[in-house]
Image 1 (tube, helix red, strand yellow):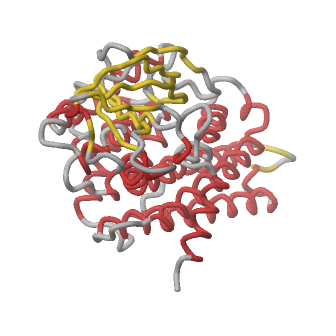
Image 2 (cartoon, one colour):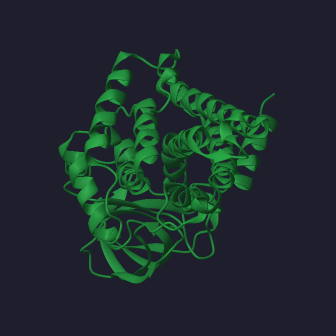
Length: 377
């Protein structure tokens, strides 16, 4: 049974504890799912999460980041693909929630009910963490925009119904000349150029935009606001990446405690060995420290802070890096079973690695944290 004592921390309110209890019951009944057909499983997971009401908080005028983090942590502890399916409904529509027009926000009811799948199309072959250098262009053509370019490593690519696409519109150099667009998946000119496979199977794709014509109403916010929009969305959702890592780490610790109590070695259980006790203590310390950073960032945003760039970067960096260490130690404690295909620990080992890269790699988070401190007087 997972440790829930953290729910008594002052970061949380009664509705968060109630949400945790409801989601835990749903997870025990519905997860894990069969991952043999990743696309079909993700589509069904989105539908089921929407039907159960757990997608309601992923979009809208007021997004409760603590709830998002709790949901991601819980889902990740039970099934990494369930966490992925939930997370993209929020990230993919974040720009619409924060900056979208009334017409664009009509999509949010569909995504919150699980009737439409969303995607966040920012990364490109030449610009991953360096958003200001993206090459995709959106040239104004009368009352329309004409998009040309390519995106890669796009989560939900190939199964999404709508994409939030960032492109260069040229209002200024670098970050000053980017804009965001809402692109329905059936828009002529959108190409799924390649489906990408990773160590933890998720629906990912390389997208192409070939003379795609979009109406001016597809613009999210104002021309030239794209970089600000992208950073605002990441400011909200970056903490939740740390929460997902926390969920993976909690599951690894749970499995390791169970293994240590039952596995016999040298005439005693693993849990009787002081070296093993030391490893378990380190794992527990990393889990709790990560939780404090994640929920501090979420709480700070929920209290009305305009930006939580440093707090979110710290949470994402520490939680993902420490979860990698916790899970690696779990592999050691499980021995051969830890690398046996299909074992939960082997699955966690594959799931955690990408979280140290997407939504800003670990080294980039260090730069963000340092620059935030240096900017203070």
